Length: 431
Image (cartoon, rainbow, N blue to C red):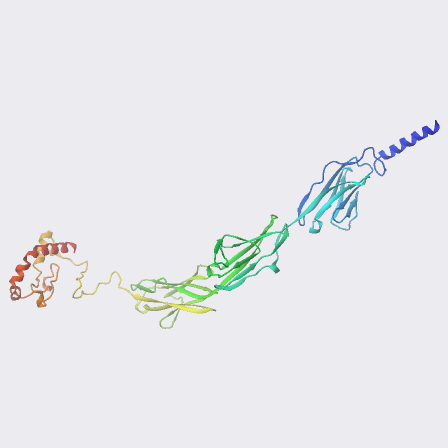
């Protein structure tokens, strides 16, 4: 009886001891995880925190282990690892936190939260450390120079996590020309891949090419690679012959293409170099990386300005020039020269002709008195000449004997007289 009572008392005391919290070795209930550990994705250099929620922990302890290396990070509220960036915290013995400050790539992996029950209970969360892309300069091309018609291969290497992908595009948004060995030519706005090969390069492909690396983790990065295509200068002249009246301003133009950039200047046919002054205005306007427009403005054209002007372009690959001929043309107020034998006469617009007043028929009749036709063209006499009214003293007059010497010819042409009269009238109206 006494032994039975003592046995019951020991059992009760043992149960009470395991039910106490703290450092006691027993619990009333087995501990369990209240929720799973969340996986974390953290950019390089940021902080990460795993949270493990436990119910009915009692006198058991919580520990943290890095699963892939089996390295113990912490037990309960004590840090075991020598990593100074690792720390632990807890809240009311139910919420246990593992803190990793300034995560590095070596921190990537799975972390296990353990309860030292028998058998042990555990759950894991994964830490993914993502790294924004970065250009590997030592493995990436720099600025390059290539002769026109040559080949250039551009390389762009990038690192990051996940692995970045690389694409190329031109800074000016022009198309990239891809020429295959088979001769097929393709134009694309962007090109995918670490390597960009340009073959049979032309001057239009000169410019800045951008190597862009991205992996979904901002920011994307790029590198600017300058492709310079070298060729000797070429000059195009829109107008090689320029005329202008005296006293007016004249502009001469030359279009130059050269790479490297050329030295450009103007020279007269006398060998004198033309520079900006009160007489001349010399300008050079850049149109692109390899195109410039040379402009020479000549103020108040004088007779001494007429002649040849040469535009000259020179770079390390060669020299070229082209000539423009400048000449004087009559101005709008300049009176024309007297007419030649077979040219119609010209008259000043300010001259007054009082004899022209009246009807067209009267003008025709008056005009017929001023016309004497050679009735025998075989005699080699002068051709009929039309003269305006008031100028009768200047017309050609044949003698009466010559006029009567060929009555037969006169009779033959008498039928044409009305038609001639009508044509004369129409001509007078046009004057």
